[in-house]
Length: 374
Image (cartoon, rainbow, N blue to C red; front, side, top):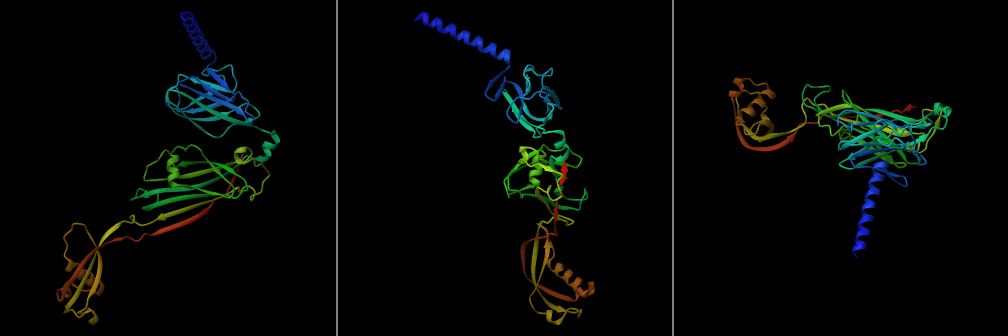
């Protein structure tokens, strides 16, 4: 038994040594098409459309995984790549924990870069981002075919309370509607660019045949990092890639204006253009009689009968109800102070209600025209 225990201990030690040697010498472990980096590291993998590793990839990482601020650019097999002997695999070790946005900006000749941004979380663990690059058929096809269709539309979102501009006080809303009129699924990338601010990250929408989606002010604020400013405006850019599987495999050669309108895109705007925003107000409904009119200016048929009027009222304010009624009569029948002194009224009843100011609501609809992209 003691001999078996010693043999087991020896095997355990040898197994540990082999594992440590394997990890320290290779830095990554391969299983099929998956690649896993060591802890506290970030692995970026570049693949072709047939799942083969592609070298010479270049990427921008935000924020810098070593400093936590700014941007960081890394190229396959460069100095900071701890996996220099393997094309298509970049490993960054010893990075800080955090969420990282990764964009591919270059790849090997003959391939197009993967335009979809990847967001990876690293928290005392390994993060893996995979990019797929598709081959470019040839120079002629590339120069004569469009690679994307772009729709650009304005957005106005939020409330303006005073004279801070740029529009009149009111509440403004935007709803951008997309309709896929094709007979196949299309994938759409959109991002928002606020005035005097940085662009949001691209967001991917998958749209089945003959379905619609909308981009609202809430979506725009979320894309801009849950922007909570009272009012934001800018542009939303909607891009439909065509000459890759991202866009459903569409290829257009010398397309006409009708061909490029892959989607129906319409922007719906609403605006409240009041000097102040609609809000609830307290209203007093006053019932009264006109007992005597010494001025002779009030119609006879108004005498000795129940009359009603409604006027705004303040909360917890003491006011002269009889004077309020006489002020309204003076305005309606052009009564002077001497005339009002000759009029006798009696208040029958006062009731309190809540009303809402009239909402001067405006709406407009704009059809967004597409533009060709390279």
